[in-house]
View 1 (tube, rainbow, N blue to C red):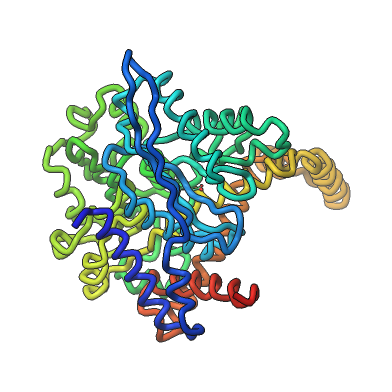
View 2 (view 1 turned 45 degrees about the horizontal axis):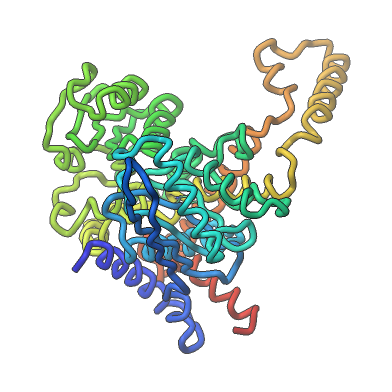
Length: 469
Ligand code: GLU
């Protein structure tokens, strides 16, 4: 059986366990579980003097809300079942976060490193044409975003291809999110998934009854963290946890092995090294071991798999020592791993919540594109003036002055990136509180993943009920 099929079975099983706990009319759970439609395309592009055929997919798992939302990944082992599993996760993720989207995902079977940027651009533009022609790309129906192997440049190519096909669509920019901030994107989208993982962990450490289940000390400061994958998500979460929360990143697992440093790795330096050499070997700031997978088994407080699916399985789960696992990737634990770890009392902050920061800020970007105005533009200066007037009045009444340093931060009106962070933090904290409340107060939810699925599935079932379907 292919790994994509196993992944899809695992996601369906996790869904089914939660669905069985919710009273729903006959047949509705099956309707929610199945994937609505998957479009397969094979298209040719003439490159390097010959025709190359590429295979791609875009799957709409659910469009109980429109548009359906989810990334497009470029990977040499992409396959249909994997895309359908990821699309299903998008449905549950958007429902859990209460975003007005259905779930979708796309992939192109390609090794992006094997092609030059101008070649990737031609391939991407052709893929976008195919998607648009079959209604799998549009601001109102299906809105892609970056995922593994794609980035903001890929997204601007897709946006431009769409705009050329639909020059009359005033909302064309909203056909895709994760665009560069300078080209219709939003400040803070690149870091959003990593930022969301940070907020998820911070909120966990604000919840004493949940920390108690791990046996960890009450404070996030000083925690040791192992991260797998220093891509966009892994890099940002490592950077924020080490620079802002006082955590030590004691190991980073990458394709070529693991690099360790008990005192904490310098993430910026390691990222720069990775950029130049393509690996973590020979990094001066740590000890390298080519047996990368052993890094996941290091003793640490928090383990963050941030690379790809099925890295923790029934095989290596018994050797995992971290009491807290945060799924920054989609599906990094197989069903069997989840069972084995949960039975040992390991706390797992599940993917559909932990990595939801990306799609949450995508939502902000989509709204910005549809309103054609950046967040904070109308009120920023007025807020600043109001703060200054208030401060002057207080100073006159009290005869004292605002301290120099804090005054500036207080007076300034919010910039777009401040509002994006505030909105993201609010969404992550609210969702975590909802999950934690179920976990601690509802017998149906023995863990956070079940709690997350219960919330998501109930919300989707509620939509269907309201629609009378
Ligand atoms: N690819 C990201 C995810 O898996 C982001 C999706 C989006 O922004 O639509 O959640």
